[in-house]
Length: 228
Length: 239
Ligand SMILES: Nc1ncnc2c1ncn2[C@@H]1O[C@H](COP(=O)(O)OP(=O)(O)OP(=O)(O)O)[C@@H](O)[C@H]1O
Ligand SMILES: [Mg+2]
Image (cartoon, chains in turn green, purple):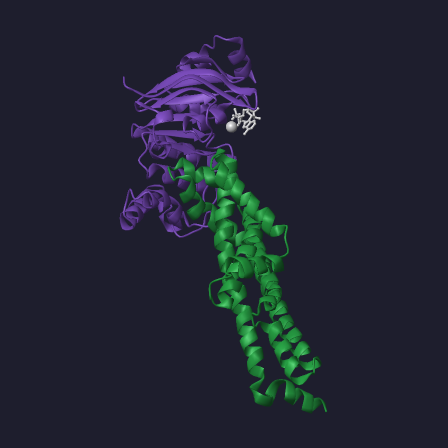
């Protein structure tokens, strides 16, 4: 009976392929979203820091703050639906790309705050050291402050990736075949929920626990660096 | 003599609290001007105003004939160096990378050329073997000497030092003051904030005494140390 169910859920008709496809999509979306998030987040964090330092770029700073607040203050599923059903309504864009864009934009707001904290963790004398040599603000950021800030926030960025791996499951709402959706597809064929759901739960756990361990290691190593 | 820096009516306020009150002075080419004065009187603030790390509330600063308000401040800073009390080396870069960062990213030198120059400079202070070390692996005195080299590679015409030895163990002070002395002998103009009175006496061509955001007295080292006129300076020197 159990073996029969297992067979029906994963082996019959190569149903495990759904799981593979779902896993791949989940990882793809999370990976590219975090990259987009880091790009958007860096730009916004630098604009806000530049504004704090010089009181310039008022409009961009305001827009950056608005973006962060709107994204953090609304559910991600709503953002996903707005992007899919409103913004990309008429285009026949690949739904995976929609997912990457939506989760990337979402992640950007959180990463902006992470990077802001990272920049604040670097003593001001680093920026001044660069400025005093004639480097302009943006060169100082690029070559002096950001490399140190990113190092300090690598663990936080790792955690953001872990969050995204789980959060992408709401992508199934607009029809993305992610890991969660894959189990749903299989179950709808077999009318048997237990195995598919438990299986993807285990896969999520392997990924998130594995990554958490990696992040912990990173923290320990970076901690050592700071103290030495 | 030709003036390299003039400061007129410089005022710096931090939210209504005036830290610099109408500072006026100038520096001629080749001079070694020292600033002395009690803690908190505004010496660091003055140096930071002079290269616009903080924007003065009021007043005019002219460097090599250029009004700082109207010129590209980044260009000015390559010729108006500042060495900090706490060195401000970049901990994620090696000694060599620290030194060549500005000249290469500002495209003043090719990377190879900058490296060569940096190694020559490091050799002259006997730190060539530390070129690939990180700042954390150096002693305080070595860090400050690297910071000085990092400023020198820009070939500035005026170097400012903000208490270059006060973050150092006593036994490391000498190696830094000796290097500054050597650099001074090349004829470069210097503006130095220091509490090391022996160092001041040995190198200064002129001394400015500040208190409470104002210049109280200035003159040759002889005048300042042997014949102080104001009560404030007499009290300061007696402590
Ligand atoms: N960014 C700032 N905001 C507000 N007040 C400041 C700021 N920077 C300096 N001050 C104040 O300005 C005054 C002068 O400080 P400054 O660091 O220039 O003194 P200093 O003469 O260099 O002292 P020290 O010998 O201790 O280095 C101090 O009262 C300080 O608290
Ligand atoms: Mg000071």
